[in-house]
Image (cartoon, rainbow, N blue to C red; front, side, top):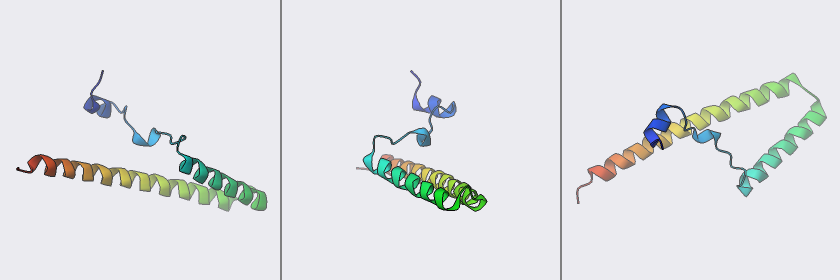
Length: 88
């Protein structure tokens, strides 16, 4: 069994590959998004502008996910440093 550092080094850990399909809020938000997307495609067809909008949204989401991950990791590391450096 590999430890977490080995898994991280070999690229076996990626928190964003996790699927939240069991989360009811996630399911509802996904359904709402897909419904709106379907309505837009029905109203405007396969619009190049809609495609550009979706690609831009995907890039923004990926950027936000990366930045959130980095900030969360930094916070966790700072928390651990403070915790272990605290003298009783």
